Amino acid sequence: MLVNFGSIRTFIFDINGTVMSWNTLNPHMEKLITTLKKRHKKVYYVTDNCVLTRSMMAEKLTKLGLKTKEDEIISSGYVAATYFESKGIDRVYLCGERGLISEFGNHGITVSEDAEHIIISIDRNFNYMKLKKIGDLVKKGAKLYATGMNRNWYVDDDVYPAEMSIVEAVKSFTGAEVTLLGMPSQEMKSRLLTDVFLFPEDTLLIGDNLKTDIKFGNMCGFRTGLVLTGESTEADLSGIAAEDKPSIVIRDARNITKNL
Ligand SMILES: [Mg+2]
Image (cartoon, rainbow, N blue to C red):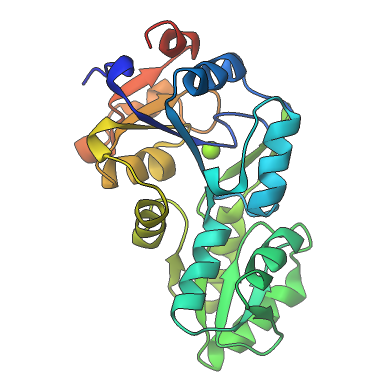
């Protein structure tokens, strides 16, 4: 399926691996996004990366040259916080970092060693005893949630583990199910569609991961565009289910800018 970029009113970008590789913007993204804003297109970001709060992420994008406001970002940490808040859950065990603690704090949720709900995210201090602790809580009946299921976190020219390897370690030890609150989950979809006024058919979601971003965009009824600057490669496109395919493969962001 081809996409008429000029007719798209809302552009939603995944952040890591799509717009940037943490400390640098990916090629031609600055020009594309500033042009979109000049043309009065709506621009939003979705991310499963919860190392930073939404406001810290907005600040980071702004410093990199993309003027961004907090409410232009829907992060899975924010989705998790609003989800727990809506369920009246005010205490969680956190396998994550300061950004997620702050995001939860903004919604009245405290982090506790003794909680009935466990949230798993990128945690650079994850270790054997944390895994043991999670196992103990699960034995007592605690439920598991994850902010994402990405394999890689792209940092400049390097690759760090994202949530997947920690989630898999927890699953393997506890044998328990993990509920996803990041992409492609119903919770992320309902948060996005509640916070952002958009028409799905006039919306394009651009991401680098077929299994998370593109699946999520398709699930929301958006047009979807796969960039090849991150997780998924052209070879990954063969043999995937029709509902997981992107509407278009974006080999060069300049192709959008010049066809707006
Ligand atoms: Mg990504």
